[in-house]
Length: 117
Image 1 (cartoon, rainbow, N blue to C red):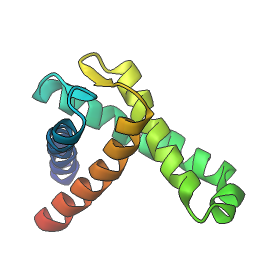
Image 2: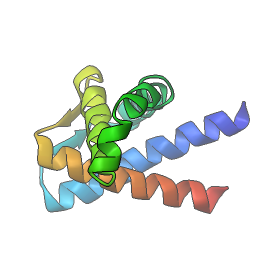
Image 3: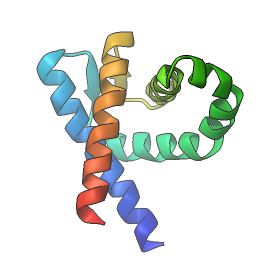
Image 4: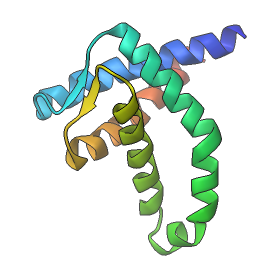
């Protein structure tokens, strides 16, 4: 249970770091209101990644092979945009910040989990 809470907190921190990085390059395009919003977004993204994303990856597996993994990036972007639609205080203004946010969030989250585990 403690590991689950630590992972949730690390994902929320990854959201905040991602917001800072994307906001530096694309001002106002990727916005998180506060830490509570980051926690809610991390929770919803975690739920989506554990329930909906495996089904989407299974359905798009042939497309993933044909596109050499680019459809996997599209699934990540879709999941991130879905979270931004349903979490008040979290806004992504377009597809470019969503793509950049998905890539940066994956990298930052991986680094944080690697460092703290």
